[in-house]
Amino acid sequence: MRRDDVEVHLWAADGSAPGAERHLAGSASCRLRVTQVEALYARCVGHGVVHPRAPLRDQPWGDRDFGVLDPDGNLMTLYRR
Image 1: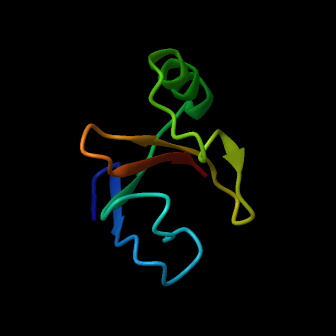
Image 2: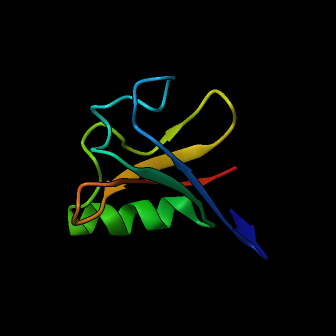
């Protein structure tokens, strides 16, 4: 989904491809493109919400991202290109 400057990517954690592994999320995930990902990461670390298997990292496809879990256990990946 995209509207103006906001993009939301949704997929099932069904094990069908890299990044869709079942251990990453219960049943749903999304990716949110942000600016200043490093500052947001520091804030999320401070709140203790960064997923232990999804720290801030550079991906082979060029994104810099990290993951957090919402209160229902859904993975949200925050990234910048």
